[in-house]
Length: 142
Image (cartoon, rainbow, N blue to C red; front, side):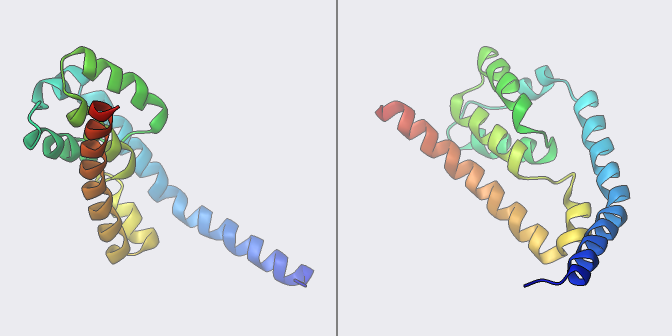
């Protein structure tokens, strides 16, 4: 059984870690918000390609840079589809947008380690492309 002293010590360390990470997290949130404000969704739609090869790569790359949250991805995905961007490109963009974070990479490197952050982002980028292609195949089969 865990003693009350160990429990208090663990809570104190957790609070201290969160307090120390707060400036980094705040900086990342501000940078992501600034990026979203500067780059409108029409510009993103104009840059995205409908090619089955180039589209997912460009979508994944842009999604990696323009990190966002899952809640707004439905709206953005719908708008991109309305503007004529292909399903594979939109899916790759949104998967990378939610899972890869170039903007957050410095903070993630500090908090979790450089090797882990780079590996996680690279794997998430590759899986965003694979996921987009799998989505396309499943939609066309079903």
